[in-house]
Length: 226
Image 1 (cartoon, rainbow, N blue to C red):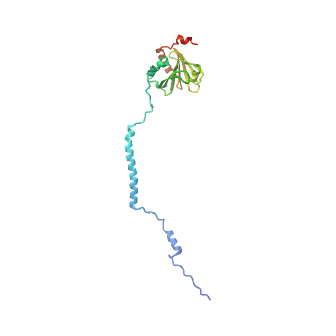
Image 2: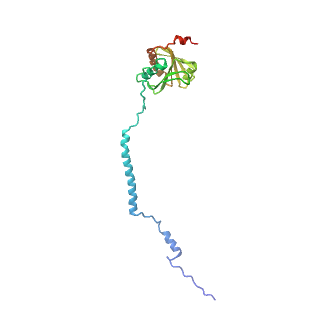
Image 3: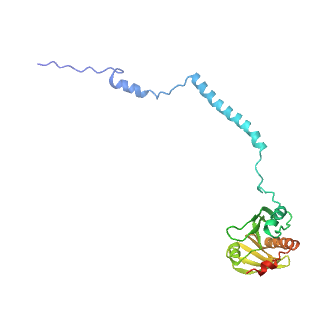
């Protein structure tokens, strides 16, 4: 015979599942930052803000004392007439220095010895009133090959009268165009993408300058040479 025992029920609130239930009933524990640490963190952020403000205040006067360049950009001070006088002896003629007032602004004026092409040239670059560009090239040694190079191989499409002279018009059909004039012993080529009215205005001034300079003549000895 075995003695039967009745299992004693487990009291509420003790052991087993009661412990896990109590844990689940509690909310998630939130970390608490000590007051001293929070104060230090706030002090660090405040210090960064103050440092940034001090830096801006230090550099602001420097920026204000150095204003940005104006929209018209840098304008080099080019004295075309003086450069032409300096090049006269080496050129063998008086290079043209058209008087355009303040309408056309030169950005270079130079004598090129023509080492590569064999054609020495006087060259001036002009910024036009409509913010385009026209380059002037003058020589006493022009030849057909050189002329094609200067005009981008553009065909002759007509002529334009400027300064009382008929200039040959060559147009690539892509914006680039040239006016060519053989006058008083030299050849002048104007090239660029400017409108034709600006070409005409510069060509007028060029003719006036050409007529004020001595004409270029070929010496008899040079003419007789084979």
